[in-house]
Image (cartoon, rainbow, N blue to C red; front, side):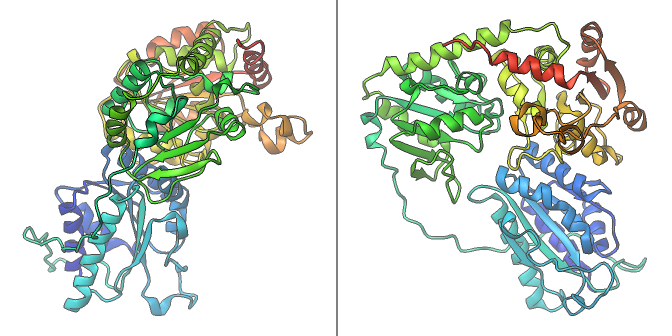
Amino acid sequence: MNLQPVFDLVQICHLKGIKHAVISPGSRNAALTIAFARHPEIKCFSVPDERSAAFIALGLSLKSKTPTVLICTSGSAALNYAPAVAEAYFNQVPLLILSADRPPEWIGQRDGQTIYQKNLFGKHAKQSFDFPSLLEGEESIKQGYQMINDAIDTCLADGQGPVHINIPFREPFYPTSSDNFDYNMSLAIPGRTPDISVERKQNLGELSQFKKILIVVGQEQKNMELNKMLSQISTEYQIPVVADIISNAHEVEGVISSQDVFLKGLENQNLQPDLLITIGLSVISKNLKLYLRKYRPKVHWHVRDEENAPDTYLSLTKHFKTDAAEFLTEAIQLLAQRDLQLGFFSAWQEINAKTKVHIKQFSTSAFSDFGCYKKVMAALPSGSDLHLANSMAVRYANVIGLTAAQDIEVYGNRGTSGIDGSNSTAVGTALMTDKSTFLLTGDMAFLYDRNAFWHNHLPDNLSIVVFNNHGGGIFRMIDGPSRQPELEEFFETRQLNDAKLLAQEYGFEYLPCLSEKELDQNLKTFVKSGKRKILEIFTDAEESKQAYKELFRNLPK
């Protein structure tokens, strides 16, 4: 097989701005591995476990805001990418997946390490391409170049996401000592005729007609420009802005952040908006979703530059397919013409303020998860990155919240909300920054993704807090499973493991905590930068449940 086109493919990736690749070992993908590894401008990471590799790549893309290339061999290897690909699709993170395959005539012939790889990820890839099986004639080579160019463009367009290219390879896979391949520095990126569209000015004229406007911010990466506009809208135009911890809107003045507590079971129409404006991706708060589905707005506008708008609150009336900052720039001009509805704004502000005081003052005698989360989050150094694993970790953190002064950017795999890749995603983002990176996780999510550390690229700026209550504590919180005799064995899946041996194996400093005194002492060491650490906090699941349930009793009205 002529390998020069493979080197040209890598050069096109470089010219399109790709800087990172995560490679899992194999023979069928050898040409891709060699061509990427030898490129002087692309940093490659070798990660044996494909599932972890894909989540690490997701973390790299989150932090770099550019597509990361994923490379694997044929057979079941690419199937292991599926959880991260689904997360990238729903969280709109760009990934370029290059799976090696056997030639088409050998598919379905019981040949080794062969499955059906075309369109492998289905609807969870923005697009799937099948590479030409013979990169030898000029026509097929040009077709391949155009395909890689289009794939990268698709990664970045209209709500970013994963794109899959399946590439059949024929033997020989490896260059000989006499072969000479290079990167064509004058290689032209294939051109593409842009889609012709009519410039349309969004009609926002009716904005001034609504008195009770509510803005809900879903998951977003930190955006100073957007937060500044939201602060202006909140303070000057008296419009409540509701945001979860993953919205990265902690610095928005007057932001409503305790909604998941005060909206629990609330039967009060005073907080019902006439117009709901949503920006960003998903929200954590189940109670917010339940409230707005019951007390629906008359009108719901969703603002995001993506192809399809979700109808999360069963009330969607208009989709503004544009950048949120651009939308708000235009909206602010019209809000000046609107009569203020101070009562609606005050209702949201007052109940949020009372609830924040309630959360801050709440304490129990038990050494519980919630109390430990409060201590850990208060101790996080300003200017650091924070990853939140799924299940209870992200929920505890969302209730407790962060302050603007902490200046912390928050990440979490909330596209699909699975526990399977939190460690790996945190590793990926930590590799892209010098900032201290913290992961808060439960024992189940941590142990599930232990292969996140099975490679030679572990960053020293990664520190992990494992809240170990010996099982999936979220099932104890839910009325359904908590009342079943199968709770511990089949829902919580009780386990007695800890992180001590893993910490030794992968070079983490290990700090166990079995009491509040030990936690206070070890936190001082833990938050210092310079060496990767694991702080493991051992709590009792039932005591943690009772403490958290107590928080929701006697809520302020």
